[in-house]
Image 1: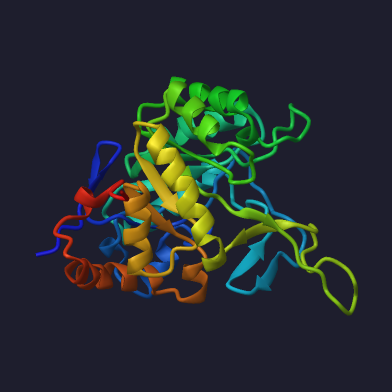
Image 2: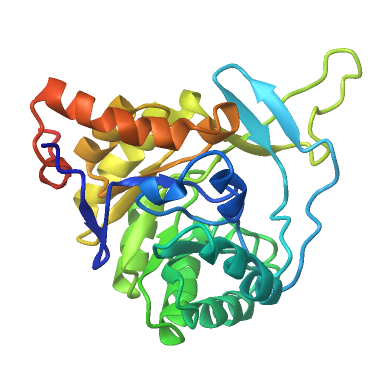
Length: 303
């Protein structure tokens, strides 16, 4: 019998498959398609202190083996997420959910995390530090170890639940940033967020995306994600959640061998809304083929 359970920051989950934030809404939208309780958990849509309409359209550009998105964190704001979205989710999901949080100042992060930390349904806080710091010249919090540590420390001071810091790959040295987050008290690291990409319309000679550039995701970035997860997992002692281009059960195994305790599946959900369910159902077959009895035993198993 294939054992797929893993422990993520002190919480046991049925399997390591987690739909990534921004590709799974607030969960209940997918519950019309299949029983989402088959998942380990899922990371809900990036939530901010105030409501956000998002970026101008068009926001999406197709690419070979991937896509570019510039949605701009469109969400109803944390108060409405708690009062409206989480009650809807409770009717179809009986597990702890991962709350994804974004912000544009330290105060934004602490306010939103403190509110969500009090929610019974929330098991983990995934803090996206790829956002621009409006008080720091617009530079992303996640591009310097010092800023990453500041956010981590501030969030940990007002929360009790595990805090997983989500890192951007658009940096020179992702290992030093992960280490700074760990030193500041992070309970886990998730990576990689999208890479920066751009497409140009040949007829209009203008960018396809209204915001000019956006986040590049999909199977094309998988080798980059595996490399960064491997580097970070070797350098920190806290759990790592790997993501970036995962599309099948074999990708899950590869990411776990690189050092991931769990994985997030993003763009593949937009190609096939049943992707995560299919991966969960296929994992036992792939484990048997590879002679793997327990997934927890292969974490960081790359020799």
